[in-house]
Length: 86
Figure 1 (tube, one colour):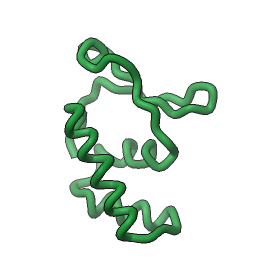
Figure 2 (tube, rainbow, N blue to C red; figure 1 turned 180 degrees about the vertical axis):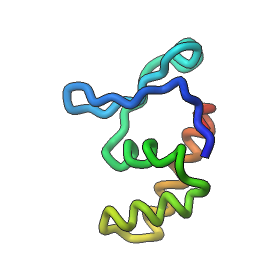
Figure 3 (cartoon, rainbow, N blue to C red; figure 1 turned 60 degrees about the vertical axis):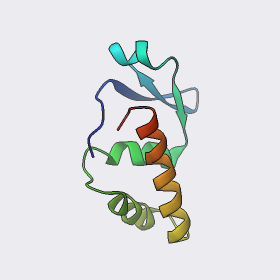
Figure 4 (cartoon, rainbow, N blue to C red; figure 1 turned 120 degrees about the vertical axis):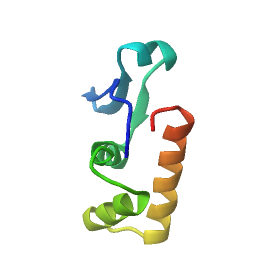
């Protein structure tokens, strides 16, 4: 999936943050807080072709209900699309 490259993933004081840099910092006022799964998804984005691939990888890593994981991944990706990140 194609993402904007103007973000840096950082862990600060136990919080996982997606920090906008460059022009993106001007367009998106503030940082995005993520949990561990959100950070895992972010790291996968440059490599994966679809939401289903993300779901498959997460199910290999975490024990969870496949339908719930699919729903959560779609919600995550839709939010990033709304913010212009994807």
